Length: 181
Image (cartoon, rainbow, N blue to C red):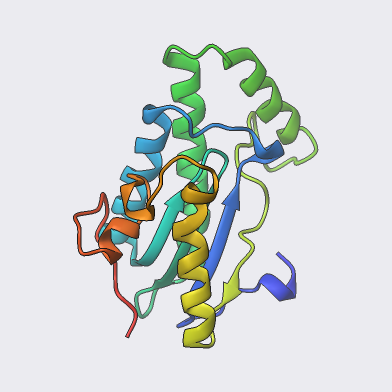
């Protein structure tokens, strides 16, 4: 991770995690639920403070921080490693018409990296942008929540199930979130 994307303790960050080759993995509920369940686990057990999120077909946006004494970089590393293994296993075991193609893409992406054994699901890095102002925070909240509207999946952001837009519209969401001060 370069200096421009460095995550420092106690910071609030806008992050984007992208699937290698922009493969549309998150089109099936099984894969989406792995992401949601793992975010919830990280909130409950790893110190992830989630302020906003939106899962698109090939990337995940979050606004997040870590509890005091916790390291956001470590949480994200563990999140990506775990979800990568779980999703690859699901692709191998669940009905999946794109199984061979997807596994080939993830295997091909893993080859240049000796640290990756078999498959690489996530691109390196998290496109971390530290949030320094309310204006920047509002801009990123708007961007994240409008993503499914721009994709023409829903007419209103709060109608998209896999985001925190419902939370911000005072409706129940899939995950609890922190509201910025």
